[in-house]
Image (cartoon, rainbow, N blue to C red; front, top):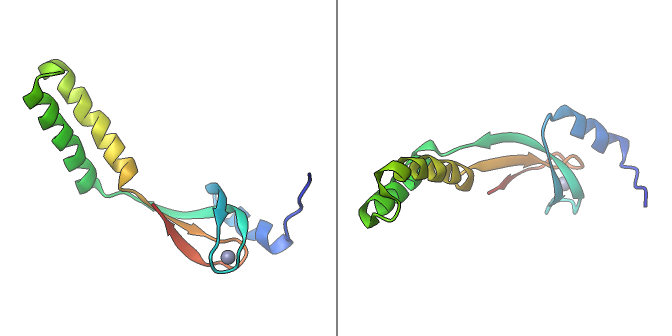
Length: 100
Ligand SMILES: [Zn+2]
């Protein structure tokens, strides 16, 4: 099935360098590709997520001192992903909304 999007939707999608697929705009009912306006990371929450798992791994002794620092950075990365907020823009009605 071939779907041709309206011209104003294509123009608005071209404004953004990054996109997300299969999103629903609750303002106008548009379903499909939307533009990414910005991505914000909470570095403090991500850092403490990594630190928490580092302490748990170190205290439990499951992974030892050698592996635990790698877990710290791994969970820091997981925390950065978990606590990021992405602002999306509907290409149909230009409404901005948050995606967690
Ligand atoms: Zn919309």
